[in-house]
Length: 118
Image (cartoon, rainbow, N blue to C red; front, top):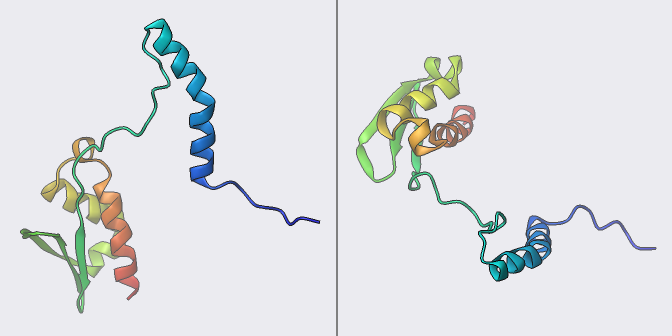
């Protein structure tokens, strides 16, 4: 008896999906019309940003990697109130508003959580 294989990997699902859409795309190209299934990943909203996060006694130093002018010290009390609010306030100030740069505040908050536990 074979053991259950488990859920398919994302790459397998993507390959299956692309193979299923291929005939539709080919028919659209032959007909000379735009195909709604051209697919692919959309372009990035903005360029990649990395954050340097370092915990000190009663605060956390945050900086956008490669941009020393963005260094800021956030008190632990502020982070304990709301990590997300602090992260989005920082990214709005130094990186740009969420609508223009994407979810950089979410990335920073994900970096801040382990730093607080350390």
